[in-house]
Length: 322
Length: 259
Image (cartoon, rainbow over all chains, first blue to last red; front, side, top):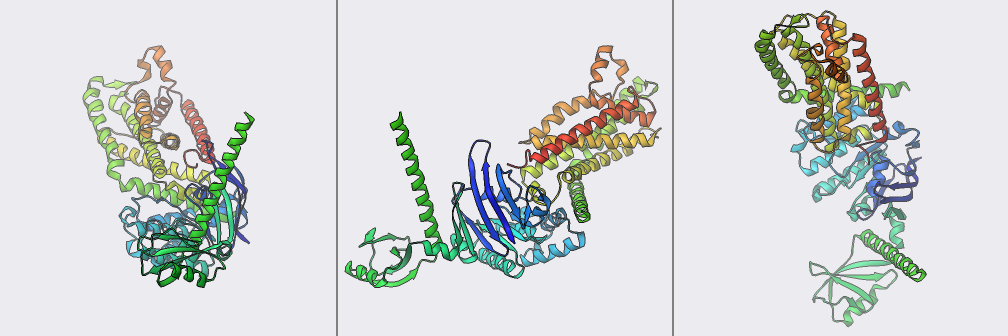
C-alpha cells in the first residue's frame, strides 16, 4: 500500500502565485522519503495540503489509501506532522502539549499517558515534562514537536526541516531516532531538509521540487548515478589560485583545500598527471561526501537557466510579432 | 462509526479540559475582575444611588439591577474567553494541532463554546455569590433563570469565536467588546426599565438583542420583565442558530485558519 499518493496537485494562492503546478508523487509504505527543493519551491505548500493546513486548488491526495476529500478523518488519523515553525502553546507544559494532541486523536487518557511517557523518554524530554514549553531550548522544542507528532503512532510521519537550527549532536541523535522508528515501527517518513547530506544518509527515495513542479524523482542511488560529475576534495602542498586545471574546473575552499570536478568515467591517473604537469603535489584526497548536494545544485541551476531561456525566447517571439 | 464517535468524544473533552485549565490558570485576570466590578456596581448604583431611587418596576432598585449585573458578567466573559483563546491559538499557530488531527469542525466549535460557557457561568456564579451580600436573591423560576443564562453564554461564546476567526491583531478582538458589546449591554436595561424611555427610544431599544437576554434572566429571578419571555427565547435561539451556522461554514472553508 502507498503511504502517500498525490495526483495532479495544484495550488494557486489568492495573489495568483502558482505554488504547485500539478505534481504527482507516491511514497511506498515503510519508505524514508526526502522532498527537496530550494526556498519557495512548493515543499511546505505540498506538506500543508497533505496535513489539511492549506486548501488545495485541484488534484487528489490519499494517505494510507484514504482520500483526503472523501475520508478526511481516516486520512488525518494516519498523519503525524512536525512543522517547520514551532506551533504549540508556549504557556503549556511539555506533558500537557503531548497529552492534548493524544486526546485530539481520540486516545483514551490512560493510553495517552503511557504513550506520552514513552515518547518523552525516548526523546530525552521526560525530565522536562512539567516545564512550560517557552522555557525549552530550540533543540528541545524540536524534539517536543516530534514526540507530539508520534503520540498517536501515525503510519506516516511528515517532518518539515526538523533539524533546522539544531546543533550537530542533537541532529545526529534525531537521525538515529528517526531511523529507529522507520525500521523498528515501520513508520513511513517524509522529510524536507536543506541539509542534503541528511537526505543522502537517511532517505531511500528522493523527489526534487522546483517552481511547483517535481523535476526529479527516484532512489538516492539512481539520482546520484545520473549525476555526470563527481567532486573530489584535495589537500595540496602548494596553494592553488587557478579556476581550472586542464579540462577540470577547480574551486579553492575557505580551509585552503581545493575541490575539483571530474566527469564520471575519467581515470584518476589522468587527473593526477594533469595536476603534476601544473606542479601541484597532492597530500590527501577524498570524495566529497555531499554528492546529492552537487547534483541538486546542478539540477536546480539548469532548471532556472532553461526557464530563463524559454522566457527570453518568448519575449523575442513577442517582439518579432509586434 | 462507534469508534469515530468515541474518538470525537475524547477530542471534545480534551478541548473542554484545556479551555477550562487555560482560564483557571490565569484566574486573577479572568475570574476576579468581574466580581470586583459587580461589587462596585452594587455598592454605587444599588446601594448609594439606589437608596434614592428606591423602586424600579415595583421592586427594590438593588433587586432590579442584580440580574443585569450577573448577566453582564456572563456575556462579557463568555465572549472574551473564546475570542482570546481562539485568537491566541491562531497567533501561536497551535490551532494547527486541532486542524491536523481527525477532529470534526463541530467538535472543535463545541469544545471552544463549552469553554466559554464554563467561564461565563463561573463568573455568573461568583457574581451571584457577591450579590447575596447585598440582597436576598431567590429566583422565582430557577429553570428559566438557568436556561437563559446558559443560552446567552452559548450565544456570546459563538460571537467570540466568530470575532477570533476574523481577527488579525489584538486590536481586532478588543474593538467588538469595547465599542459594540459594552454599549449594547449598558443600553440593554441593566440599570433601568425601558418603560422609562420615550416611545421612540423604547422601539430603538427593542432592536438591541441584549435587552431580551437581560429581561429574560430578570423574569426568571424576579418574575417581572419588559419583554415577553417567548421573545427572549426566540431571539437567543435565532442568534445561536445563525452564529453557529456561520462559524461552522467558516471552519469548513478554513477561514482565518488555513491558507
